[in-house]
Each structure stands twice: as C-alpha cells, then as structure tokens.
Image 1 (cartoon, one colour):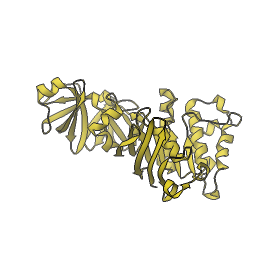
Image 2 (cartoon, helix red, strand yellow):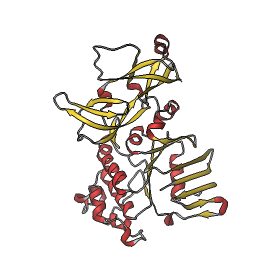
Image 3 (cartoon, helix red, strand yellow):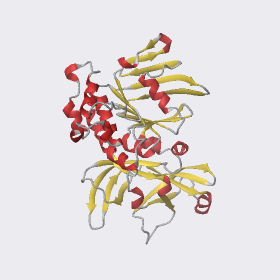
Image 4 (cartoon, one colour):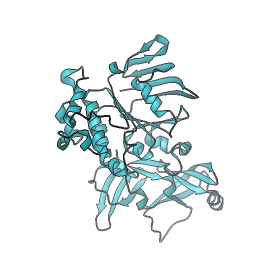
Length: 364
C-alpha cells in the first residue's frame, strides 16, 4: 500500500505544509512537540479538512481540494488509535472488540475475533470491563477493536505516550506482532526515538510543520542533520542485526551486523532472531590508535566521512564502518587534539552495556 500526502493547512499562527510518499509497513511521523505530527495524522484520518492539498491511499483519492474531493472519515476505512484508549466503560473487552465489527462492510473478508484476540494476547481479558485493565491492556483492546473494523490503514497517535516504562515494555512486543503478522499498514506518530527505531520502516521527520527528512529508519537516523530533531541524548545509528549466538557463562549475546559483530548484554532471544541495534552517538568514543586493555568489547575500525558542529563546543562525527554509518558526539577539544576530520582512519568504541535496554536493542 502506498500513502501519498501533500497538504497545506493553517492553524492560528502555525502552518502545516507537508508532503511525502511512503510504501512502508510502518511509517513513523516523528518530531518534537508542536512539529505538526498530530495535526497531520488528523488530516489523514479525516478529522480535519485541510486548506489545500491531496491525500491518496492505495490509489484512491481521499482528499483533493483542487477537485472538491473530501471523503468523510467514516468512509475512509481507516482505524485510529489515540493516546487514550477511549473504550466503552459499560462494555466488556469482548463487547468493545465486537463493536469494531459493526463498521466492517467486507463481511467474510474481515479479521476474525479469535485471531485478533490471539494476536494481541487478550484471551484472559475478554470478560473484564475497561476499569479493570492496565493502560497497556486498554491500548491492546483499542487496537483489536480497530483491526476488527478491517481498516486498510491504521493510524496510531502516540499510543504509548500515556504509559509508564513498564507498560510500554508490555505492549511493544504486541505492536511488533501487529506490524509483522496483521499486514495492516500503520502510520505511527511519536516523539520517541526508541519507539521509532524499534517499530518503523520509514520515518517522516517533521520540523515546524514541514518535512525535514524522509527515508528508511537506518538511513535517516544516520544523518548528522537528524540530531537537532532527535536531540543529542537520543540521536544515533540504527543497524539491522541477527542474533549470532550467546555466551551464557559470560552473559553475552553476539549480534551480526553489516558493520561487524557486536557484543551486548545477554538477550532473551534465540539464535537467528532478527532485530535492530540502536547505537546512540553519546555512547560512542573515538580512538585514533590501536587499543589494548580496554573494557569496551565493541571496537569497529572505520573512516570519518562527515563532521558537523552542533553548538556549544559539541561536534558530531559520522564514521563509515563497512558501508554503515556510526555516529559519535565529541568535544571541540577532541576534534582539534586528535585531528578528527573527514578521511581520518579511526576506531568507534562502544561499550556492550550501552546497547542494553528497550531503546537500544529491539525487534525488527
């Protein structure tokens, strides 16, 4: 499925002027608060009529202001998951799920209740009322209700924003299963680099109402100009990886990536599992000489291909390692003292523990 968006809309002093095309299974609308993410997804969903522009989903024109086309939201066959689950408090989980089927006009082509319940792990919850559910459970029910309406596109507006870290960790594997098994394309709105790195195939970065970058997640996050959007604490590279094996005695998992083998703290994943490794720029050190007696297990030799000053004496480097880009944050003093410039052969030094945790190593 292909989503084409080219719209212009004014909201008070804010102007949204965004255009992109995506055929990704999960398209992330990413940016800081106020960038226009929610406004854009509301326009795609038909909750807001844009001043001008065009929206096409899978070849069908939903909006074209030049031709007077505006398909009402109830005829777009789009599912919408909000930050809060918005379940019916008087209905059980089963009743909330079945409500979604009332909006399906495709009969036997619709997803089956049992399949959606199994996909989202809702078997033990069917008789409960929403008041007896955790935040993560409520969101899983909301997703199931939307899927049972048989949408051709699922819109998710910061679905984890209201959850604490424990509930986010609970629901993320279900979102991965949704991405991989349900086969429903998703537009996922988020300001979380960790969520986008874990779930998305295509990222659309928004700044001040315009698209500043679009492309595969690994490619966009490897760009130096993405740091101001992601923020210095979260900017970094994303590498596709496969679990090559484990050393249980040492508590280590080895990941095979195009940049080389990475050692990380033991993961509860089988050999051969495919995932993503996110290496934050702040966790990478740069060495210009051979290292010995160092605790870091990941030493990746490469060549500096780009250097950019990010302000306040901080520089970001892009190091090419076997065709992959690893990012690093360093001081102006390090740049000057070590002669860090494009073309310089260096080693990217990455601690194994820096790759541990939800945001660092995550499912593809």
